[in-house]
Amino acid sequence: MAKIQAIRGMNDILPEQTPVWQYVESTIRRVLGQYGYQEIRMPVVESTDLFKRSIGEVTDIVEKEMYTFDDRNGDSLTLRPEGTAGCVRAAEEHGLLFNQTRRLWYTGPMFRHERPQKGRYRQFHQIGVECFGMAGPDIDAELLILTARLWSAFGLDGHTRLEINSIGTSEARKVYRQALVDYLDQYRDQLDEDSKRRLSSNPLRILDSKNPDTRKLLEGAPSLDDYLDEASRAHFEQLKALLDAAGVTYSVNPALVRGLDYYGKTVFEWITDSLGAQGTVCAGGRYDGLVEQLGGKPTDAVGFAMGLERLILLLETLGLVPAHVNNDADVYVTAMGEMAISASMAIAEELRNGLPGKVVVAHCGGGSFKSQMKKADRSGARYAVILGENELASGNVGLKPLRDDQPQLDVARAELVQVLTDKL
Ligand code: ATP
Ligand code: MG
Figure 1 (cartoon, protein in one colour):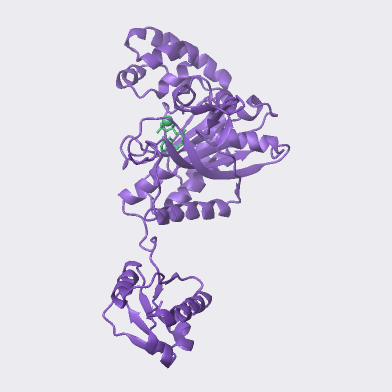
Figure 2 (tube, helix red, strand yellow):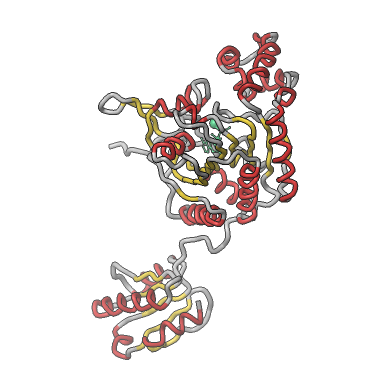
């Protein structure tokens, strides 16, 4: 019978890969903790309307990337394509936003029906950060300073660059939108199909087009920068000054818009040149209008999402995964013969008590001395504890170094913890 396989674009993360995931997640968790950010966990499924109303009907995500299905009672549900909408929904639903500031983060799988390729999957993982109740630009700067610290923690200094832009208020964008439409209308025939459609429905999205011919036309288009409102311009100038003062390097990219409807004022992307076309590892911006758009009180908000697959690919590509990030055991405890099994399990427990930070693997499943030593070697352990009938009788154990040519030692069981403490 044909074997059933994983869904295309949805990856298993195998035991060989989980150490690097744990390393990345724990590093991010630690840094976010340093800044006082609190974790929130949301369901992976939300009502379809939530995404339509927040991300925008005329976006790639809502138009063609969502996994939407009818629940058994007929409600339309969607596997979350991103975390901001659900985070706002949850924060609002539980009264986390009223009259207070919040710094939240979450992590987990997101789902988008895209063409799978390197750095682009149908199930992928993000760490997202959302801050509420702060108008910025101080909090905008904090997010970028925080991400810069993260890159440093990963040894990525110089491998990511920051692009920022201001897309102004929705009123300013309205005026600009008209100017853009007037310009692109002259070249209607030369636009790609998506862009043609968007010319009437959501022309700003065209700036996001990846079609090379459309991109060429856009070179001569009016610039959003010239249409910015005074408040947004001042906000942006202050943000730049804060980044300068903090030593965070950036470049202003006037063409940076972001593909989701809810952004306004500050938008940014951290980009790497080491991953080809899928080079954006982290992206975000302000979305002061979203909470109200979803039925809450007007609430200032800013956030970002980081793609974990891309970040991990980047670390692996650059050889930046530290050597200690692996599944290696420290000690492997063997047991030769029926009689030794119970003693070896007790010894393994003693070692776990005495060496709490170390990985102690107890051999299970029997087998010859040779096969047990082979498994000990494969576990990555630096030492094997050898326990057979002779050792049982003598009250000592054999301690065999596995990673160098040192001879095997005979160690009293009572001293084993101390000896290994000194060696490991
Ligand atoms: P892109 O332009 O590459 O499609 P996006 O603008 O759709 O990205 P966002 O919605 O801003 O991406 O998501 C934030 C981050 O999540 C991205 O910068 C990227 O690192 C990651 N990401 C987005 N879509 C995918 C995907 N399909 N597979 C893997 N990572 C993704
Ligand atoms: Mg996308």
